[in-house]
View: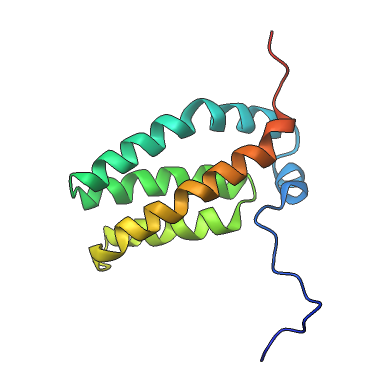
Length: 120
């Protein structure tokens, strides 16, 4: 069934849902995400470059938990697919998935930026 022309695609993030699920921990989860995500993405890219499929799967699982709590459905799905690599999914998909994940993470960072605690 083809969607109607006026239908919008699902949003990349549902921050209202994330805040409701996480209640008073949302701000803390945002700060933890920002503290870890760049390093985690770097290690993920390095593991992929070395062909360490099991490590890619482990790191994707870790990242999947973070982005799922923050309501980022596309990034969660991409991480889940990367995680499946460790369970026999064809590794040829890995590079494309990691390329897709980078912009998804950057969009999430932009959406979360206004929710960060002020410095100090």
